[in-house]
Figure 1 (tube, rainbow, N blue to C red):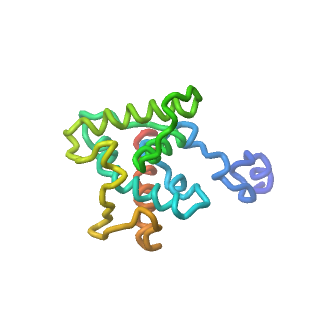
Figure 2: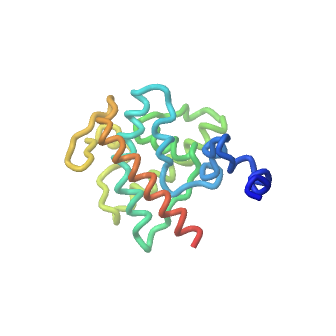
Figure 3: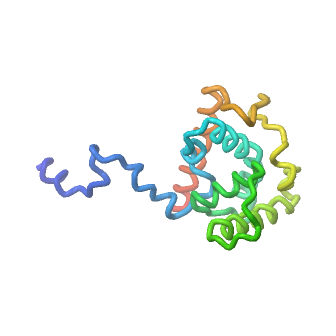
Length: 172
């Protein structure tokens, strides 16, 4: 009987097929970046700046989630990446009419809008984010090097936990 049940299970639930391949949350959007997106690059320097930028912007996005009068963002993976790239200082060619540059401009406008709202008490602008200090629980982090493994695990775990809680609340 058990064998018959498992033979009818969709392929994405079978143990021999990794579930993460389907990346459902990325298609639907998330309220915070997915932790694995911070490590999606093969370059440790890129991973380091993605983590550092997330830490800098973290108070803003947690405020958006927790404040009843705010409108939390539900963004897809590439949109979160644009926001993190913008926070690092990466700019796309303004005159370019490509879809990527257009999406990047939209995320720039969105980020500027949220940073301008001072109710969150995050003292950053798009221009100051790249040079702002990076601190995690009273520990200064580098923008050019990955944090210690224990610290990186804490940062990623927090993102996993909050994203999980937000998914549960969305289902409720």
